[in-house]
Length: 49
Image (cartoon, rainbow, N blue to C red):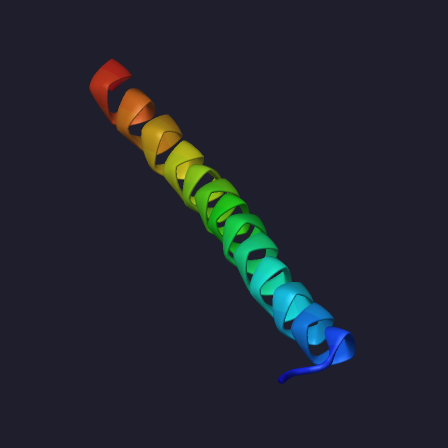
């Protein structure tokens, strides 16, 4: 049977992976919003001209 330490390491590995995926998705979403803002400003300026 696997020892408690091995099960703990596996559990931490799974939780760490899930947290990394969530944090990464938020970072990607934030950069996407940063990229979208300049494009919206440019399109607004073009419409005004």
